[in-house]
Amino acid sequence: MELDPLLLSRIQFAFVVSFHAIFPVFTIGLASYIAVLHGLFYKTANPAWDRLALFWTKVFAVVFGMGVVSGIVMSFQFGTNWSNFSLASANFLGPMLSYEVVTAFFLEAGFLGVLLFGRGKVPQGVHLFAAIMVAVGTFISAFWILSANSWMQTPAGVELIDGRFHVLAWGEAIFNPSFPYRFAHMVLASFLTGGFVVAGVSAWYLLQKRDVEANKKALSMCLWLLLVLAPAQAVVGDFHGLNTLEHQPTKVAAMEGNWETSSHVPLLLFAIPDQANQTNRFEVGIPSLASLILKHDPAGVVPGLTEVAPEEQPPVWLVFWSFRIMVAIGFLMIVVAVAGLWLRRGGRLYEHRGYLQLLRLMSVTPFIAVLAGWFVTEIGRAPWVVYGMMSHGEALTPSLTGGMALFTLIGYVAVYAVVFYAGVYYLTRVVRHGMQDGEEIQGEVERPMRPLSASHTPFDDDPKSAASGPHQ
Image (cartoon, rainbow, N blue to C red; front, side):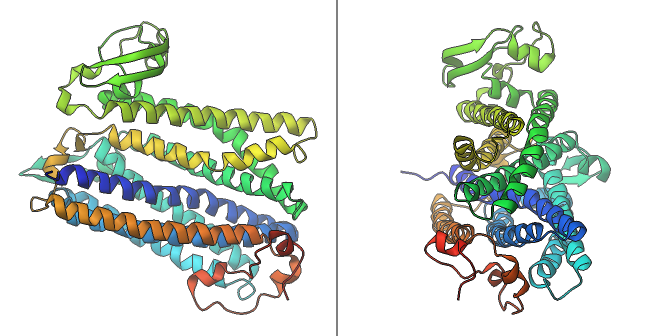
């Protein structure tokens, strides 16, 4: 069988991006939460905030390290598998990625060192400042990366001359038409991810009656946050969808499973897209609702996939179902947040075991929603690398063979499997051990010699014994 280097390269890039994306989306939200915890401790001197800050900083350190390891491969792939794209986009993407490293990564890494190793060694105000700078660094990093990605979705401020993009207006290129919506959508997703993970872990501790005071505070904070951000994400997502309809109508047509340009387009709850025959099978939908959402008019005309040639259509079933998974999880988040408010009013928030168990399960759903959203964004752009200007085939490395692409794909899968297993194993041990009490925190005077050792705690195979007090 002949191996297709283009298909294998796309699969490889999708795998690496998917693996990497789950780490930054968590650390962006978690960094801000840690900064808030440090601020609350600085203001109130309540040791519960300090215990929470120390615990989640350990989690952040591990996840940040996994994000760095998985992200390094991204830049190499541009050169190995997509050299034509690297050459063509170098005038814009080269500076953008450099700005991200200089202004964000160095800021994060430098102040993370102070945050991890400066406890008890620098003034408390300096420690708080380091936490804030780490959080600011994550936002700056997201700014540059999402601007670069948004430019690939809605290119602006450039001209393609002899196969190379030349920047005509940096402001237009950086703040391209989809960037504000994509940036807001991603930041809210990060906060929702961090919020649900912290809420899920806090709920698990409350079920085990471990450090009840601190975990009640953490759960209460997160649920107030989620009550505001989950509906806000739906609103921002609607604006983002309208922007996508304006600039990438084919992607929206794939999201809606709409083949023919028409009015009164139904919102499909279920369908099996048949791309070969340019139709859907087993449709179940709400009449005119898609037109109402996208055009704010039930008689609004929504473009169909047949407006472009079949070879310019994305894989419809992947985009169609990824979009529905993302939206379904978003509405579930709203329901869970509102249910928390209802239980809070009844005074049963911290004792309702069914709800606490639900929060544990919900801690995984933001990652699924983020991956589904990225599938919609990236697969829905196909067959374009730079939308409407450069296709995947034009971007591929000319000398790349199917065998070479398969070899690196297998290598990445194998290495990332080890990285993921090690990271999840270590995170599990950190979470099982739980938070240290005040005496343990004050007694931390030994300087760690390795970065990950800053998140090290004396582990015990029995989580109950880990909660009983300091290890001897």
